Length: 145
Image 1 (tube, rainbow, N blue to C red):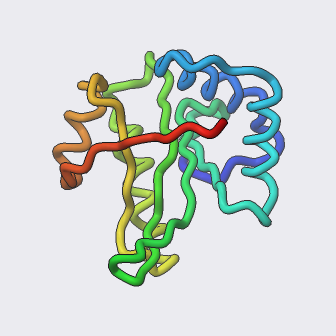
Image 2 (image 1 turned 30 degrees about the vertical axis):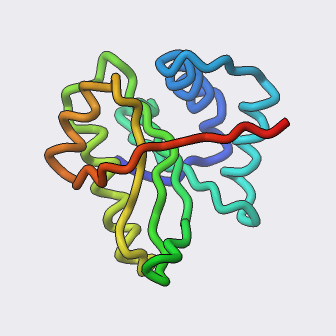
């Protein structure tokens, strides 16, 4: 079952998000987790969370938001993070989460969904290449002071 993340999910969600951070070798701490959780739970922030639940246990999460696409004069959905517990991979959970986002795209009148992944994430790229178009754009980041 796919549903919105709820307040009761924080501990299970944090475990999964720590797994996501570990996968990308990004350090994680309580302050970051609390900030992101507050954003997800607060309707004034445009960060949303969904989960894939199996037998009362969350085994997959995704964070998304609305993003303007100026060159088209439209909004799109942007998938920021997605993580599925390793022992449940290969069961099309990520594909189901993305499919749910596609239905949210229609409901929100978005002109599609975008996301990025690291070039080394071969497993995810196999799925993404089957269900979406690779835009060919490369990501650059200018860090703040």
